[in-house]
Length: 332
Image (cartoon, rainbow, N blue to C red; front, side, top):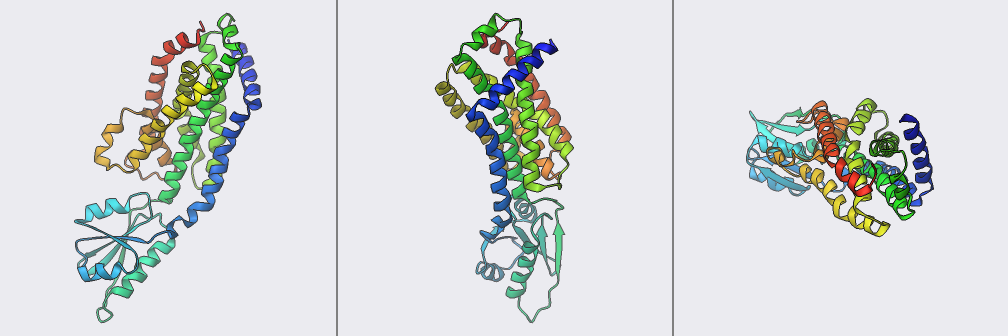
């Protein structure tokens, strides 16, 4: 069994490296990571936004609006929830006569300095105010967290595409028909294809994460998260290869399904936490949560919990769909 898997793995790896489209897809996340590594340090300079609650006087809010966009919230909890979102926004509240600047703790130093400088300008100079900083203790920038998580999700999907496009190539060259009468079983076929997908996913994940954040994350967590979630890409790849009979058909399947795989995690970013239960049935949601924990472990769902659920959900889905793959690929 293992000899057949090893042989078929080598054959598929050689074919993958000869496929220009697969080569382009494997280079794409590296180029994306390079672009993001240059873009992210400057993203906070695009717009200045300050969040305040109802303890801040209206005349102070009016003056704050001269320096940027001001968002007002009805209470401190709503203010903290806004500060915790993915962008770098400082919150301002007033307690016991003191103005408190609330930060996540992962913002650039300039965010804190800007907040204090703006307050110093608008507060009546005749009154002596002191400032307190309340940090929500995040480590990395929320932009790094969001971008890094999306890049890892993209890599998982690209790893799956290597399977799907490989099967399409075998169909177009009648290799798949030859496999149906060969000694290889469906289990061995899936394993040999999956090993290639895992290989691409792990290598690309390590390279892109290093480009984006260097040694500031735990690479054991990267490995665990990728291994737990790579089955999502594997399932997608076999679905593409099973449904489509040629490259044109494969492109149609990719267009109709890729949006869903990306849209669910992206929608969760902008959905209040109390409504996240609607995403619980989707393994790509849990995978995205495990990725977020790599870059920022102060999540409301911890890394172990998200990774275990991702592994169980995706493995269960793979087992459920295996009979479908057997029927579509006609491999015993």
